Length: 559
Image 1: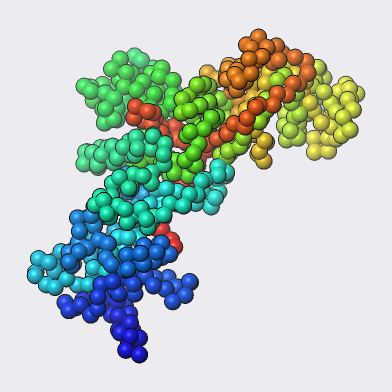
Image 2 (image 1 turned 90 degrees about the vertical axis):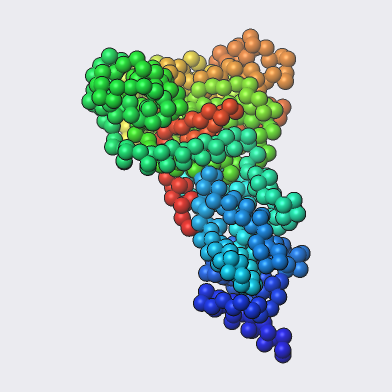
């Protein structure tokens, strides 16, 4: 009975701790900590100084093994590692996360009160110490989880993300105990980062962008107004926006000395524009077109948001893909990389889906190649493109090497159809394009079966690869270097010489070749990344996917 009364007193005291603090400690610190985290039933939400605990199960496990002894204080004083934890919470903004999600305000208040009591010579307040201890431990668990797997659930987004994440048993409680024993947190915190080497470099890039934002706010620039131009600005031409363009190039470090009011496009300014164009994935031709203007209009805050979103995307990826043979397609960069043992053996430009036929983000396994493929035209393309073309040109099917087939596979002569009377929605035939130079799939396709019916293929429209904006397909991925990709994929078999591959690509019948292994294909969307040397790159958000993730990152955490 006496024990129940004691626990009741502790509970009432903790509930009222925002209103009163006693210098005399009513009970031992371990029992206070236990009272803060212990649940009477699974649905109960524990609050510490108005803060919901994120990881009650792991916290219980952590403190039970410690017999509920304090982790972050000793002898009534906060340990140095407690201040290090608060510093790591502040540093979370460089991961694109929100420090406020990790009890920062409450921790700051508790630290201030404890420090003030110490200065005044008061006895340490066990209730404050218990609250600080639990919140610091919970903040560690929560931050470790977000760094390991991301804060945002990609499956809850409108945009499709179907790349399976690995969900290892990370034992955050064990890792925290080890860090406390070692007396330092940085190494442990870094161990939760995605294992891709570019993550730290991308994080450093975001840190520098915060410096640019501070510089921006302290300067007299104010808010950047949108620079507009009716036509491209070329070297030697005059434009009223050139003084402002120079200011922005100077701000980013792409231009040193300049005449701020000069309205003629000069060589020094062109050199700065070329550097900006490289950073934003444009051909560095020095011409100030709409893409370059868009890059010039990006403020530090815009690029902070972009970097934050892509650090989160990197946290969603499975860690083990970096060590595997892999085909990686970044649709935002219009690029395919074939990677083996962490070395990039092939890089190729690609064409991806149009904005309204966006290529989804997913992973699958490539298992076979089809040389000299036929193309069974999708119903939507037959209705929207083939039938209108046939109505205009009776020779369309012959010119495009296409056949008209019934549901049973019987061939129908296109000239026997009165195309003027065809209703596209009631068209009973299938259109198939035969192998050849004109085939829309080109001379080879690379198959990784998936529910989106997306695959990688050649194309007869080779001239499109010189374009900067290559969001031009119906969703599939067209590759500029199909022969080279086939060669590296078949390199295990000496019979597949260069000549044999070229012969297979120019047959009048399909030839399917099964690979001797299944190769992961990861199709993702990164609009910000770093190379191995720390050079940063930004790409235009062609599918308007970034904002949804950024809004979710900014949302206060919910239990």
